[in-house]
Structures are given as structure tokens and as C-alpha cells.
Figure 1 (cartoon, rainbow, N blue to C red):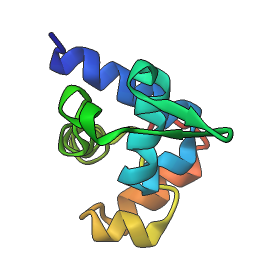
Figure 2: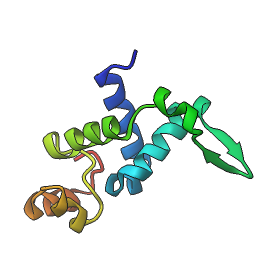
Figure 3: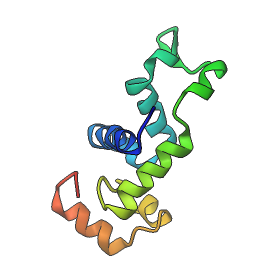
Figure 4: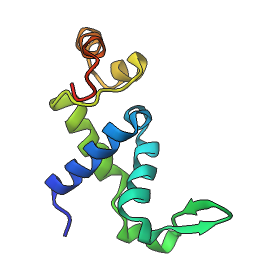
Length: 107
């Protein structure tokens, strides 16, 4: 059984290791599946795919996105790299600029 804390830790790990996932939930989900649920994926011609029959067993995009929103919006960690994305997600420009000026990925 997956716990919220476990899911949060896994999402934080990906946001830290792959900053490009901070701006795109689809990319975040792909990294999540590849890192934590690879047993559900199939490799064809050097590309990984999720067979439709495995979707029910996988962690949903909604769950991963919900945890990412909590991490970024509520906790202020691993903010989007793009100001445009940050604004769309309701993160103030002032907060984003402060975070970007710190040079610390965890803020």
C-alpha cells in the first residue's frame, strides 16, 4: 500500500534530481514510473511504454500532480524553473524571484 509520505518522498527525489520535471506533470509522471514502477513498463526499440493493461496498477497522474502541488505551493520546495509556469500555478512572482535568487534547489 502506497502512503502519502512515501509518494511525497519519491516525488521530491525526482523534482530534485530532474529539475525539468518541475514545470511539467507529464514529464514528472514519466520519470516517476520509470524510477519507481519500471516493472509496469515495457521496453520496445529502446523506448519505455506503459501498456494500457497496467494503468490500473500504476500511480495515477492525479496523485503525482497533487503531491507536486503540495510540495511547490504549500511547502515552497522545488519551485518551477519557469516564471510563466509559476504564475499559472498561483506562485507569486516575488516568491519565485526570491527562491530563484537563493541558488538553493530545495527552497
